[in-house]
Length: 317
Image (tube, rainbow, N blue to C red; front, top):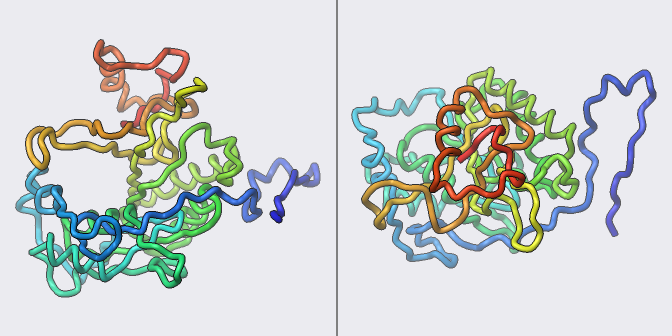
């Protein structure tokens, strides 16, 4: 049986000062079965063992012309982090294998990271190494080895609740990492998705935290997702970009690919649908208006019906 909190009531004198109440659980999140795999080229087991990575850290450095950068100061206080949700564990042994194969410039100890929270590595029969998690840690550490790296792990039943716990931890931290990379999000009108622990008040509280985090000089980099724009084949509805990537004080990154394997011009990915789009809650930002307007005017953009998306909303790739 499942115990779910119903409506809550506060005294009239106190109610105006209460934005939201957190920590009460709704229905358990229907969890996707984690993939027992490691990132391409790891050779550490799972259904991708032995696969050779085409896009390596070295190739990324060449593609983006990252040359002449100062050598990493390994005794500095600079830190970076990935954030993992939904049972996606990392494994140090697999990261070490990745470094041996694809990061020849690494020095002893460059493949080490710190778990923040109770744990971030599997320790039970039902725990699995996450493909998403391993890709996150490999490709934030591989291109610039030697910087202190952390894995912040949350394994709760509801995504919005975990995101709120994460933002609260950042704000409570005296010295948080300067960059967080997050590859997770929720599609649709998240403000009414109670299965994910979300509500209008919860989203507002989290996005207020994003504003405070940005004011501290901490960057939040979100993936725009790979599940398309949130519509369905049989039931038409509004198209929503992935949240939290669509939030005002977050930076969203869409996937790209090379036109020919591991070389050639770079282009938007075509093997899956981006979770980007135009938000219904947040208006288009002034700094993106020119580019977004130019895109919307393109005859080859293949845009959906006007009533299905918000042309005036904040754009994400």
